[in-house]
Length: 199
Image (tube, rainbow, N blue to C red):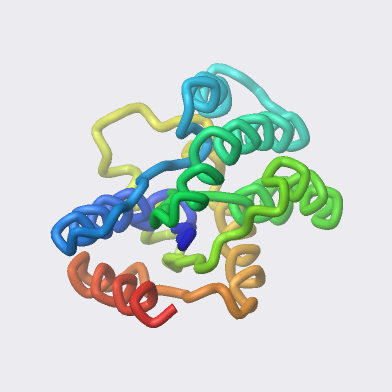
């Protein structure tokens, strides 16, 4: 099974990802935890460029960067794990490209979808958990962090609102489950766990 966690910056994706991995480990499940962009040596190198706040990167360049990282990720990590009947939990996948570079950056969605399909070679998640959270709440969380914000986190509120609305549009498909990001951590984890268990 291939499960993806999606959401805007500050929505709690990384926390949920970690919580699910811990619970699955306790349950004795054979799970592969990974993320995008990244998940491989090449992907991590691309990630460092993608998030570098000293760079100005056009949305189309972003799309090509994350697609290059994704192609390597699918070939090196995701497809082999699924072939071995392992459970894959990934922090971000193709919805991020459509939401950020499409709805957020203004690129044409059909072209982006073709690029995503080329990068994944047809691999699609069985379940997408979208953590939905108001942008103002997410930005307040981000501002509380002690580190310097990356290039994507530094985008303005209007950009993140377009991304959020894009995610909600994408989440109308049957493979999506929308989770309430304002819930306490344990309640959010329980809702995510139930979504996986019933899929």
